[in-house]
Image 1 (cartoon, one colour):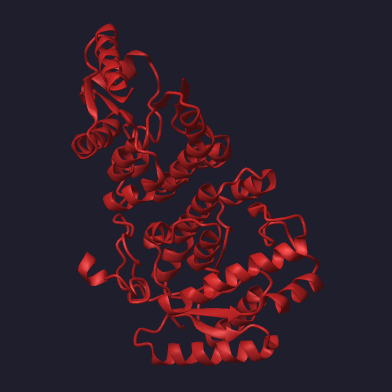
Image 2: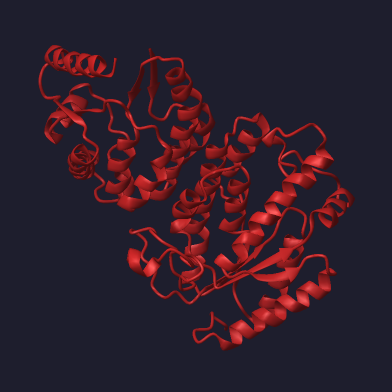
Length: 180
Length: 250
């Protein structure tokens, strides 16, 4: 088994970090940088374990980009074409949570909302919570379309972690049984 | 633009200059900006920078505002691209995507503002270099073209054409062959001279194939600098003269 996380390739880290720090990324450069990161991980971290017959657990995949980049105003078809080099996952699971629940969870942990995560780059509101609510609700709308379009399995993430894990394991085992 | 209008062929050559080739940036609609984009294309060492410097002087004397933009010169991406090249960690996809990111940054921060302000943008290489390099490395050409659909079609594209042998001599005289100019990442052998010629030959073929598709104006890059410059000035002069909405002149 191999785990790969969004936005973790060494190659693109420097530029992403610099761009994020200076808040210098536009929706388009944000999108292309993350695609570069994804391509780097796909070739070095995802395809080799697949060839070796391993299970790759991807913490976010191209769908994150579809949702987020389009919420920022990037063309919906363009971003899909951009990621057409990605390997189609055998199973994609979407943990769906209402906006207020995710806000409560983030704020309860007293984490400061990140600039780009809260969509502050869009300049819609100088209040991070307000900006988060507005930006993430667009992201969630996009996800709802993606679920249908790419056949994502939805898990209700407002339930307890134990309950989510129980459903998740069932969904994964079903998929493995089918593919084995 | 609809799929019907775009059609199968001439998709890119047929686009109105100053407009996005395909799926552009929905958050930055282009509104008949007064500026103009003039791109100079051609492989490494063909003399683009010299021609651009001379063009800039000439246009400024004529009273035009001039902005320059050059390949991999974006503030966002330049350090990363240099690092990636130095550490040899690029694969063909990340190679293409990093360049696209550099281009996007310059498009939004340099090119579009200059067009709005009525400047003539002199582009030292445009997206075609990226397409040629991607093509040589076997990246799907349709994918690359669609990705660069957010680029703005230039008003004029000049292609300085040269053959691989003349180019090899010129690059050697100017100080030698570099790793990437010789396509050494393609791992076809250890002889840099042979690799340089083989790689540049493939690149020239890619450029040649794009000439019709994108409406390049082809100039003989083996001619003396002054001869090429005179020809550039003649053609650009004619274009600006005939242009209904001329860029800002004081």
